[in-house]
Amino acid sequence: MPFSRAELKDAYARWATGVTIVTARADDRIHGMTVSAFTEVSLDPPLVLVCIDRASNTQPLIAQGGVFAVNILARDQEPLARRFASVEAEDRRFQDLHCETGVTGAPLLVGSIASLDCRLETAHEAGDHIIFIGAVVGLQVSGGEPLLFYDRRYLGSRS
Ligand SMILES: Cc1cc2nc3c(=O)[nH]c(=O)nc-3n(C[C@H](O)[C@H](O)[C@H](O)COP(=O)(O)O)c2cc1C
Image: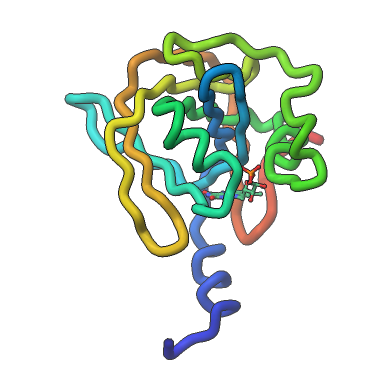
C-alpha cells in the first residue's frame, strides 16, 4: 500500500457522520454496538446497510438472528455511544436502558431520534467487515437533534 494504516484511518476520520447503535437479537440473546457506517440504500423497496467488523460480537448475532435495528442517536446520547463502543462495558450495555421491541424482535432504544427495524436481506463480505443490507419493516421517528462524529470526536453533545 502506498500509505500507512494510520494515514488511511486519518483519511476515514475526515468523513463526518451521525452515530447509531445497531442492535440485534438471536433467540433470547440481544447485543448491540456503536456504528457510524450506516447508509440509506433504497426507498422502494426500503433498504439500508451497515458495515460491521467481522471480529465484533454483534456480527454473528445479526447473521444468526437475521434481524437488526439501527437506532440513530440524539445529541444527548453520547454516553450511550461510548458505552456501546466500550469493550469494558460489553456485558452491561443494556443495563438500565429503556428499550422497546421491534416487530423483528430487535431492541429499539427509546430516546433515539429514529429507529429502523430491519430484516436481513443479504450479507456481503468486504475485507475485515461484513456489509449487512436490511429491509426496513418498522420505523419510529421522533424530533430532536442528532449526535455527530468527526475526526474521532463527538460534536454537538451537551454532556
Ligand atoms: C463513533 C464510533 C463509530 C463506530 N462505527 C463502527 C462501524 O461503523 N462499524 C464497526 O464495525 N465498528 C464501529 N465502531 C466500533 C464498535 O462500536 C466497537 O468495536 C464495539 O466495541 C463492538 O462491539 P461488540 O464487539 O461487542 O459487538 C465504532 C465506534 C465508535 C466510537
